[in-house]
Amino acid sequence: MISQRTGDGPTLCISMGDPAGIGPEVALKALLDDGIRNSARWILVGEAWQIRELGAEIGFRPDQVVTNLASASCTAGVIVLDAQELQPNQLVIGEVSAACGRAGLAYVHRATQLCLDGQAEAIVTAPLSKEAVAVNGTPFCGHTEYIADLCHVPESRMLLFNDELCVVHVTTHCSLQEATYLSVERIRRTIEMGYEALLRLNGLPPRIAVCGLNPHAGENGMFGDEETRFIVPAIEQIQAECIDCEGPYPADTLFVQARRGKYDLVVAMYHDQGHVPMKLMDFEHTVNVTLGLPIVRTSVDHGTAFDIAGRNLANCEDMQTAMQLAIRLIGVHQNAE
Image (cartoon, rainbow, N blue to C red; front, side, top):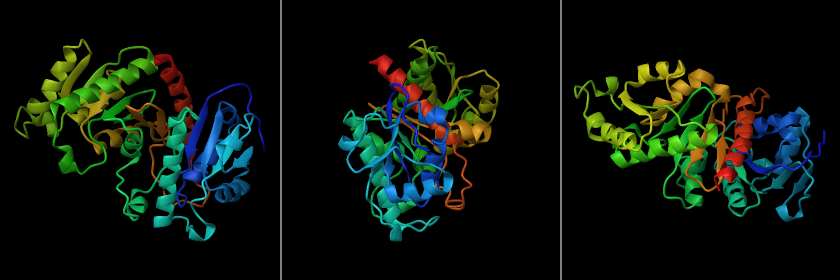
């Protein structure tokens, strides 16, 4: 079904992710919802031939297909920007390949540039395979860091957003050993960036709690001194700014208290410390947001799911939530300017 956009709304890019994964499927399925489709102008950055083939299977049709956005109609609600990065004979669904990794990264680069050029107001990213990108010899540890580099920003942070609870991470895509090399300044800035984001989003200052790094938050130095050396001084600096912030607390009990409503934002020291409880809590409605960018970027908080790719089994709820949050963040971003 072809649906014309109703009224004025924001323009958002969707980078279609690794073509061999579920990214294209969840993106198109998400746009089958008329409420989402008509809420904005959507630019799908990917392969036109793949979108046509997949669309024929699930009942999706775009309003226009272009190779240059300058030729796109201003009334078209869903536009496919044909990236022409991958040929049909290069795609094997569900398998890691250099060709798909290279194409998926190119989609992200082009979508980000559209935002930086003012042709779109946000980017929603479908999942990439880090392994597929790395096969090309391209340094890539994740969307968060890659897009931050494209935007030339000195620092960025990953926020997992859910209406029930949010988590911001001090470190993300690095080894666990590297994540233990803490600094007071990085922890302090992470807390500040999370605080500022939730204050803008919700209009109220968040109640913040900070995880320890070690089991039992170090147990008064019995299991490590990172808490007293790095985390406590950072919290004290934040408290001096009259920000409601407590900790460090053991992560295993902190998330229980936060889930029960005691806190709005948890500061995690490393990737899995924040991701595991959030995905257990509400996998389908937790969105990855990059803080510190001059543009809005949201993402699904799941991977390429090669094991179910091409089988029409992928759930698009997380993509829909990411798209809706991106629209909400555009309004917040514009009000802050």
